[in-house]
Length: 134
Image 1: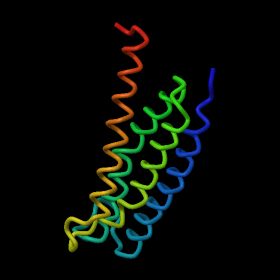
Image 2: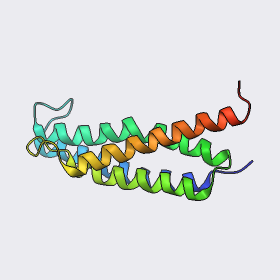
Image 3: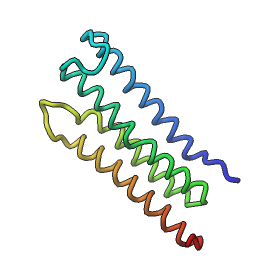
Image 4: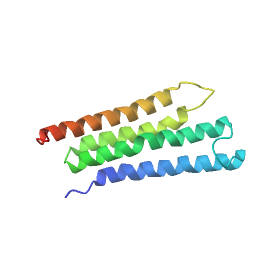
């Protein structure tokens, strides 16, 4: 069986990014002295949403990318999906800000992540159909 080492690379990079988001929430909680929820503090709300948006998108994307890698999809496709996902998730937090409203970072980050999810999901379904999955 093929070990999904390419997916492992992107999972590792995204894991480091997740740690940064977790630390940011913790440090913001400490500074604004809010232990639970967001206390109505807009800075803490943003940090929590940055973390939450990451958690909402990345796991399913990585699962699908890993499945595609296990199925033998081209390494170029796997790398393309991984790079777009990583760059999108790296950019996205910089675009979340109550005062700025809609930003290019938020649009690119959300759009790129959603594109990876859609492409990977469609590829997984397509490969299932090709395998005679019915």
